[in-house]
Image (cartoon, rainbow, N blue to C red; front, side, top):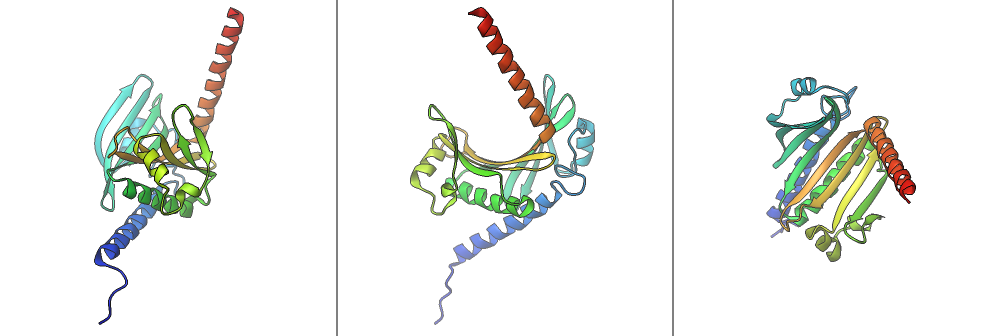
Length: 223
């Protein structure tokens, strides 16, 4: 009697992963397709323009001073997701896919899967890092955490929120970041694919540098 080398559970998992990969790759083909930066939108679009373009199910709009957000509900394969658009002064500056995951192994696997998808779409990343939070915080450039099986201390770091995983790409108009992080809940992980306007990001860095310089000058004058 011939025994299959793969159990039904393994075969089903492989099929689900392949389906997720194909569906997200199809979604990613929309991201940056033609003249678009994210799905069917471009940086600088107004809230009204984006709301007319987006076909996912609308959840709500959030207003915070000069900043606004549009939240939508969608799914990729059997994974529920949120599509979030961020506006500054009624201009689209950032957008993201957010997946909520309740199992660390699934979170790591989906992170690696999305990383594969984004590499197919955008080429090799600028860097892959694990970010260490807390007193010994910083970004550690390393690919070792992507190896399977993942080291126990890395998984434990993800569980307690002391470590998050990040991969980034930089394109002509857009910065792309892939994150896996824990929201201070052992059973809640957030997997995010974030697209940010490069022009807006550079403007924010310039403003931050100017503010930091002003603080230093004020402190020097007070001495």
